[in-house]
Amino acid sequence: MPEEQGTGMFEKNENVFNVLFEAASEGIIVVDESQIIVSSNIAADTMFGYEKGDLVGKPLNTLIPRRYQAAHPSHFRDFMDHSEKRQMGHGRDLYGIKKNGEEFPVEAGLNPFSIGGEKYVMSLIIDISVRKEAQRQIKELNTELESKIKIRTKELEESVQKLQNANKNLELEIKRRKEAENRIKNALQKEKELNELKTKFLSLVSHEFKTPLSGILTSVVLAGKYKLEDQQEKREKHLNTIKSKVHYLDNILNDFLSIERLESGKVNYKFSTFSLSKLVNEVVYNANVTLKSGQEIQYPRNIENINLHQDEKILELVLSNLLSNAIKYSPENTLIKFTIDTQDGRITFKVADQGMGIPEKDQKHIFERYFRAENALLNQGTGIGLNIAKVHLENLGGSISFSSKENAGTEFIVELPIIKE
Image (tube, rainbow, N blue to C red; front, side, top):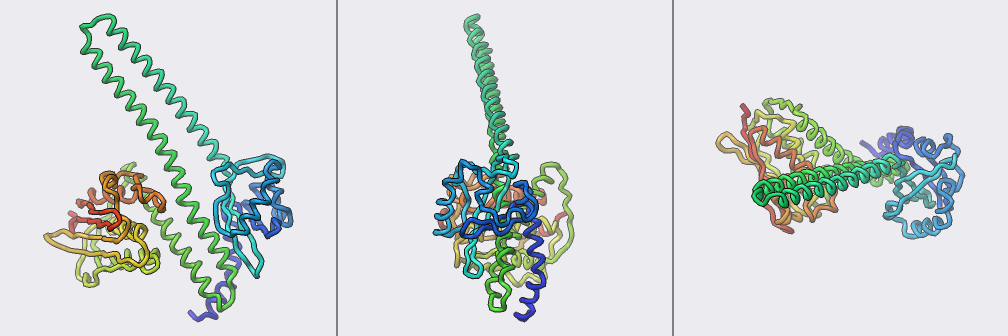
């Protein structure tokens, strides 16, 4: 498309960016260097109890409880001096104040930007009242559960002691009761661990969605500011960011849908005959969107005459997950090898990277749901992709395995029948 047409498209669709700004579920407030509010969306106005436009021109302290106002200006100046995107609070609880004086807990991210030489800060604000209440209830339930464990344990110990004092000949029975006691304690402990796991998973999901969505929103707003022809490169940068994050969110949603279907027994595999070449091109094309600088996927090209009779969508999900992991856990300027081999009615896919590898002590857990290796905790991820892939492949008559060495790369191997009867 010529540059003139590209510029016209963004000018023509400026209203689309305004609609996205207003339609965002997060509250968005933009302030200038003097901490004066210059813009806010409907979600922010509603969150703080104001009518549309009432916040424009007001100082940011209007939305901050009085006990925090004294310290806020120095924090703001320090942030502007360093001018970096970050999360507010750093472990502290944050609160906003509504027009009617009611305080409520919030979570906020700061995103600095400049327009025409003027500096601004965009805050993405979420009302976390519901989350705080849920955390309080979970903590209360866990405390109650621990109390029940102590009471039940004490009761069982007293019963055992009475039996020992009553008759020494009942040692075998006492032993059995102790074993029963241990089983109960283990069951209660597992229940407690499950509650904690669910809590961590909900927090993980919230983070995995919020971060890409915040990035998408920021890129959309900033891309809308670049309207000149010579700013096409800047627009392309933000558009590529949006594409990458949308692709990441789409993969997460597919994983969540797969978990729900697997657990509810609603998986209906749809078998069809399809071209291997078409499948591979689709998987590699989607993976290319998320490649880091200098990364390259090497894949076979001479597979036009191979057809499979399998569930095409499930196989695409599995291969996309393996390529996504290879890209995510490999540094820039590395090669990812995607190879295919057919023999004796079966097909083997291999995805090998030059990334961080999997620590030996974590390898036995790698297919467990929600598990993430120790050296991958700082990377985005939910720890469910490989678990889903393993279950699906076994249902399709296949298998998945891997070999890995920390700091030397990983190779995943998928094998399944070419024709699923």
